[in-house]
Length: 83
Image 1: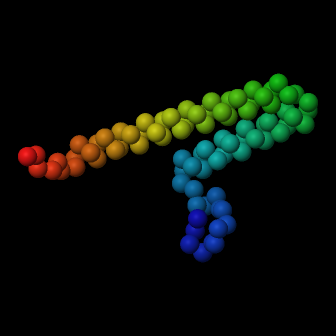
Image 2: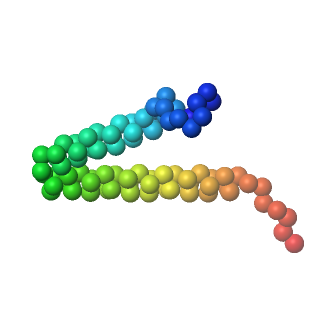
Image 3: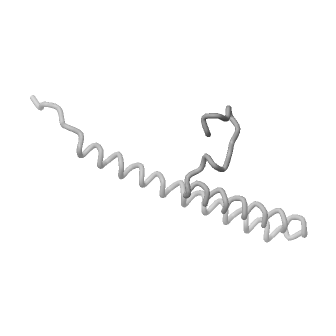
């Protein structure tokens, strides 16, 4: 959040990748609400499932990236003396 705001979320606070993710979520939510309003429950459920798949894939990718960063930093970390 920007330093001038106290707890107010602003899209200006997001970097490009976070902005893209926010836009995708907003689009899926909008399409799902239209499907629900039209009585297309199966379409709404498919959109919800698509969101879940995307979220799980994103989370897995981020965890893998974090693990790789940790492993790289541990390789560069000086080892203690061995007795």
